[in-house]
Length: 276
Image 1 (cartoon, rainbow, N blue to C red):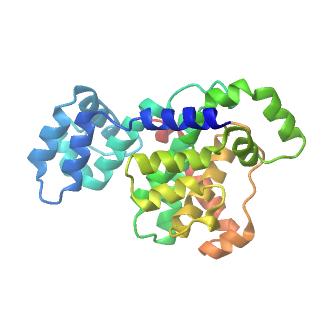
Image 2: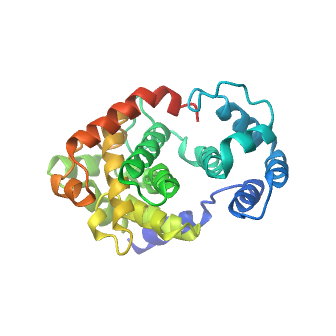
Image 3: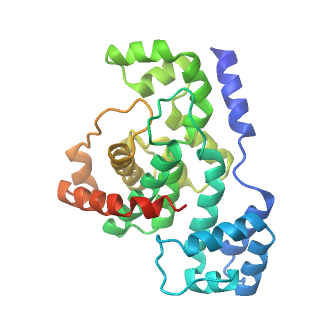
């Protein structure tokens, strides 16, 4: 077991978030003293990112009346917060848009599930007037990133895992028992290695057990709810029918009607969401 744990942690350390050019873009976007020209020039350094920003800016997801024909136009029209979301999402696609070999996949993919969770988290955050809906979006996007690391181990132990599930064991407990960590904990370690803000780290690490979050319970609850919606809309992995505890809904200040409204909204936008 110890060798397996060390191997898993080594893979976590090797998983890198972004290219150097994209890190520069995110740093420029995070600096309030930079202007439109500096942001534009940073994006133009990466031809692939430039193409993606223009493609997504002109997608049905944003539905602007006029065609965006230049990066400068995109920077002015979209603003820093939306650009950060686009840049981060495009980069994470390279990591999350992979076919899982251990966790079961049907017509839905981990990437689709992650995008749906991200948009769901953002809409829940808006409903709650949460202070930073961009962090909720990123937490939703990355909530299952630990599965990327554990996937090969799950593949090798697939029969044993399905047997334990049939006996009534919980997936998180099975992962912990067999690999030393569950996928949520691995995701939290990845977020820490990438030096992501604490709210994102805790929303990932506790997306199945939000009340166990040490400091950021609200965003952990948001991503917990978003994951449940995404599991209903775009299930992936060893999923069962998602069930939200009414006590947790009450704790966050929502009801079932609120959740249904958000789900209908996400389903209506699903094709546009996948433009990313």
